[in-house]
Image (cartoon, rainbow over all chains, first blue to last red; front, side, top):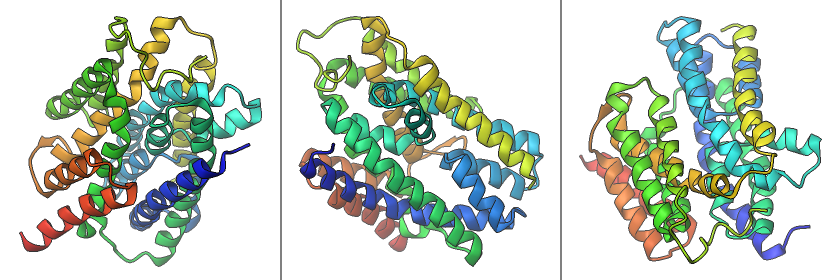
Length: 232
Length: 100
């Protein structure tokens, strides 16, 4: 089902991201326990919610004494972008059976989208998804459990690990910048995310960034985009 | 923290994922829309990179993360392996923090 050289490449990329996931999962677990969650609650939250940014924001609002409603609102805004990622990943899931699609949907997050859409053909994309998703899921949930059990404070920022995600994403963004439309979409997305940050609740500017996709309306390019051949 | 909070958040986040990946995404779409969908990762990844590098909460700022990003961008441009890109980028940010 999977081409071996591809498979190895995705396993190693996933394990690298997985290391960051374990550490961030641990810091989430620690934070959740300090926000009065039990070990079971922290772990179940990672298993069922599986959207790091939402989980972190929910737990930090509660830890800071905020209401459940405000914690929920912020977390839901941050989760909204997964709907857009789901659209981008839907061609990858389209060939799978319904139960697999339902499982796969839970694994639609920033990192799986980035890894999968950096590939230029449908088979590689499917391979990338079904290999990376379970590895990242296990890393995040396992890290959460360990962090919740240990409970002592670790700050990923001390190791420069808060820089890990933008650094990963820049490597995975590169293939999307081969086309004019991709460059425009990326520039729009970046500007919206930064310039709107002071004026909007956290989580909203990134949804505005998604509007950069409408640079695809005009069929400007005569050469097909390298990422477009997998679409049915 | 209550269990109902956790289950409600789980339902909302899975709902978003399901909406995009299965409910809307599994229909056949006109070519214009397909072209737009292919640009989503470019727009969102660039947005996330910019947000994670140049903002903290709701404030815009320039710090050690930007240096890490520049190094990572150069490493990507030079087509270095993924692991090397990450180590260089993260290492740059960590070193600057250590000595700053």
